Image 1 (cartoon, one colour):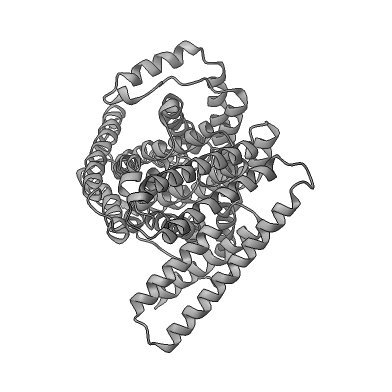
Image 2 (cartoon, helix red, strand yellow):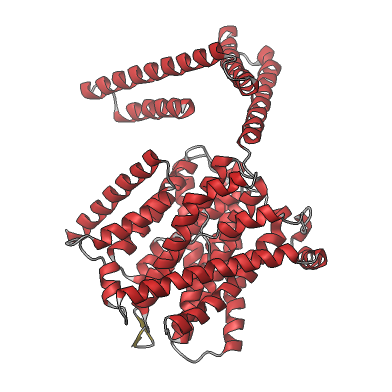
Length: 536
């Protein structure tokens, strides 16, 4: 029962901390990582010990698959060179520099230092993307952040896999590089096969439950298949998610996206809390004092920031010919004919500044740290607790401060574009509704549907159009203008909420009377939930 109590406590902690974050208007990842830290320091809170293999299989596959599937909605092609330079060159440089710092500053053995560097290298865009969406940052910055995070998850954790193998001995630098290339390419190949298979199966389905099951099968199946061969399971899941995500419009039903959003939120949140609960045992395993461990971690945070800042500075002064050369290489890769312009536009100083400050580490680094094996080649993994502790400090340092200050930085640099984003949103929605009205008028004469039904459908679409027009007028009005329209919108909104509340009350009465089958009640519940979602 102890395990069940821990699970219940974790879920309760996630709910409480997420509610605090929402009420305070703070990024939930920052609140959760700090909350996990506080939980770990409370006397009497049970220490949790996880099987590293459970972390590898239970957390990583769905996290990276869901991120890749959702990120595929961005057009990554114009920024592919920027993404590749950040996700490969910057990651490998970070691995080397952090490993050297871990060796010099914390006194780690070289193999453990490289494990530390591999875990500190991948970025996590969760908080950064949330801030960027809120302030309406340029689409290109969003695409680069998402694309960088996806690919550097694979490269960073592939380097982690090589470093763990090296901990067992018998691997040279040359063989390590070849192994890194092999597990990366092999993992991507497995993911491509799984993604292709998934797309062809899901095109023949239109059932959200089955689509979710197949998505989970693709996430875990691609990861396990690649991992069993000795290749990168993370890159396999990322590639499968990216491939499937490119065909999301053809293969996804409306009910699947909320599931993946909820699953990602729960897994990431639980990871933040789990590492906090393991802190007492981790701290007890440190070779030095707690103060020394914290000081070493702070130095590593500075190193991580400095490496990323130096890389962005180098990109700023890099001659255009270098970018064109990299683009030419990319365009010769298989399938590169799909790239409209691999070189893309050079990044401005303001964009590089924001990207440099957005290198947050998060759940993937924590999951990798928790998955470090206890024993390698019949010997305890050297300085395991110290590596986990330092990764945790790096995550806190790179996540909390930037997530709380990034919005003000974006605004100060003039990259916030809420008004433009709202205008594009209104224009896109207007175009969609106009298309629906045009198609309705085209089919109405021969649809075989009563005229009053046609008129009701038209009234729904015209009401949406009226609301969009009213919003457009309010956006263009000065202070105090169009107040009547705003008041009317508020009144309609309040009225619809009262109607939905009455419908829920009636549904509750039907459920209490037990005269209507449960499946009928569930269908009505889904319809009411959908109406409320649209209203929100």
